[in-house]
Amino acid sequence: MLDLPTTLVKTLQHLFSENDFLMDPADRWVYGYDNSRRHSMPSAVVFIRAHEQLVELVKLANHYRIPLTAHGRGTATTGATVPIAAGIVVSFEKMNRILDFSPADRFIIVEAGISNQQLQETIHPENLFWAPDPSSAAFSSIGGNLACNAGGPRAIKYGTCRENTLGLRLVTGSGDSFHTGARTTKSVVGYDFTRLIIGSQGTLAFITEATLKLLPLPEAEATLHATFSSIETATDAIIQILQQPHTPSALEFMDHTALTLIRRYAPELLQNPHAQALLLIEFDGTENTIEHAIDYLKRACHGRGLLEITLAKTNEQRKHLWKARKALSPLLRHLGNQKINEDIVVPVSHLPLFIKRAELLAQKHKLTIVNFGHAGNGNIHVNLLFDSNEDEIARAQTCLKEIFDLVIELKGSLSGEHGIGLDKLPFIENEIESPALKLISQIKTCFDPHGILNPGK
Ligand SMILES: Cc1cc2nc3c(=O)[nH]c(=O)nc-3n(C[C@H](O)[C@H](O)[C@H](O)COP(=O)(O)OP(=O)(O)OC[C@H]3O[C@@H](n4cnc5c(N)ncnc54)[C@H](O)[C@@H]3O)c2cc1C
Image (cartoon, rainbow, N blue to C red; front, side):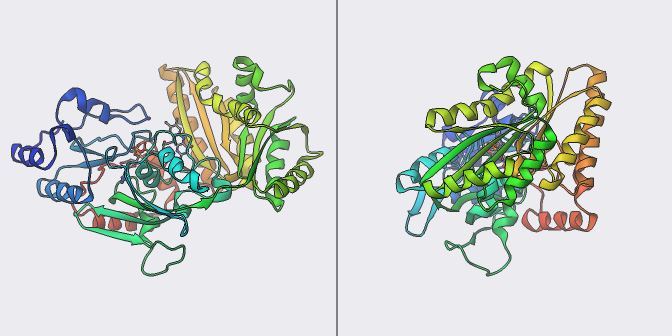
């Protein structure tokens, strides 16, 4: 662990209150984690309360060359939030105010530490919502959502953070501070720093404030389960559904291994004993458009190995249909005490081939692979399950490498929403060509000349 110079500690004790500057090992320990199970002890933790305070901190850290790692709520799954070079963890959890809200202009300006759910609860009474809906919304911060370009089931219709953010307020690694973007949905003045910073996982700048684009809440929603006799027929139906004029607001997929798990451990959530694949489909809009959408959906699925379609009529029934999808992650532990959970993406038309070849890789390496996720975006959570003995770990690592090779062969992307972090660093050259990697490194130097922001990522 890196020791902070005494003079720096004294200055920080002056800049932050006692409760906002933690040096006790027991307090610091929990800020060494994210959801990747990796851990690295930071030298100190500070809670930022104001933009100007952060500017001062970054200038000091530059002077002493001390690493700074931004921390929203630590739910990242890739090690992105783990302070591997020690230094200071900069937590935004106490910087969570609403700064401006204009329902008429459909934007809200928030500080980075507010949670996704707190934001939604503020804007719902005005019949508005912010589209990005990661499953971690109840807890994860807007700053973390933006730094990871998070998305959820709704991304198929409404996009991810990049499509739903108008502007940011930043502090770069050299302590410069500026606004990006505008309060309007159109603006082409200068380079698009907003989209560059979104997804950069705290390596280029701290996000202190964000201007978010809001959308009107739909008048009505419908949720449906469709079960199929084979994976091939289900993936074929996905392509047909996306060709009809109503874009679903969610199109989630579960493969036969996922359904076997549900049958064994939560049988009440799955009625049809013959189902080999399941689609969870949602539409939103007005009552009229939804009726049309369901008609189109039935036509798109009909005669393609469709076993049955169940339509939820009440909120309770909707929640029941989602339960099967939400139950999956915790159920995976029954298949092995170790899990590699990737979030690859392939063009939707390649989904059938991807699923088939991933199954062959599972057989070849004698592993269980469970596939489920946001099929409408071609974004599949590929879960490799195994036990923690040397042989199985080695087979899982080889299989993972071959899965990534397959993704690139199918013109996909290694990560749809979790990002690179530490876990996928060894594979980044598979996807990004060397001239682009060189530019990435130059951009990093422009924003963070001494490399103090989230080093090693
Ligand atoms: C149960 C569970 C479900 C999940 N479901 C989804 C999902 O459906 N979709 C999805 O996309 N992700 C999902 N995730 C991953 C994770 O929740 C998201 O990436 C989330 O956006 C991280 O937010 P956070 O506040 O926890 O960020 P953190 O984990 O604290 O930080 C994540 C990254 O952002 C950087 N960062 C944080 N705040 C700032 C800031 N203010 N300025 C600059 N950089 C910053 C950090 O340094 C780090 O690199 C899930 C995770 C869990 C545990």
